[in-house]
Length: 241
Image 1 (cartoon, rainbow, N blue to C red):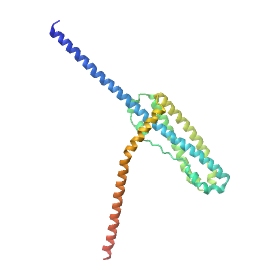
Image 2: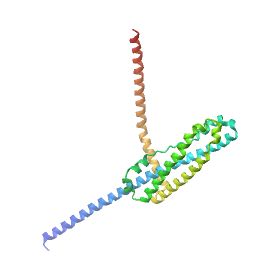
Image 3: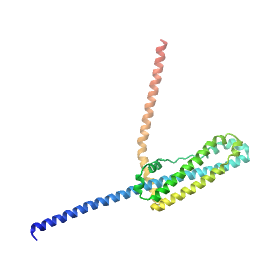
Image 4: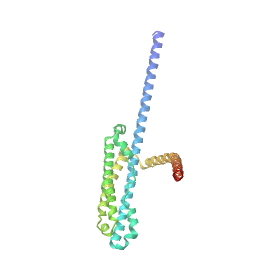
């Protein structure tokens, strides 16, 4: 084999190895990036589900406390006034956000990134049930609360056990969906605790700037009010001349 041919073959081999290494490394990096994005999205969704369940458990507890006070007041009508605030404080209030659900439902990339149809279907089931809970339990209870607390007869006739029954049924279904999703994606409560900690640190880091902006806006607003009040005084002086 001539020297030139040998050098050419060695150069070709080196080039081929370089190309394989370059594309192979790029593919590995891309796969790692995709796995990281998938894991982050899954954690975000599961964290949202867990926060929702915490809020719903609290509302479920509040409605049961409402029922206990209701039973006492119905048995002793004279206690309505002294227990009015206690009853009002137990009306369920949904405090979870729907931001993650909106992102989940609005992008086809969610399915592509996660890569598990069963997971996506179970999450969708969870959010569907959450909407039912909001409408059939929270909203209906709130809509009736004003009239219920207005007089003894309305409180006496209010069927609060039916709301508790629905709440427990929805809560069980959502809890089952949540546990199935964790199992499918192999995410532990410890991992979600860490995600929660990271979210809180992020909020704390940005809270200072937000408070400064609010204070600045408040100060500017007060200055405008004072200027307007001064203009009113000066205008009255002009009119009285």
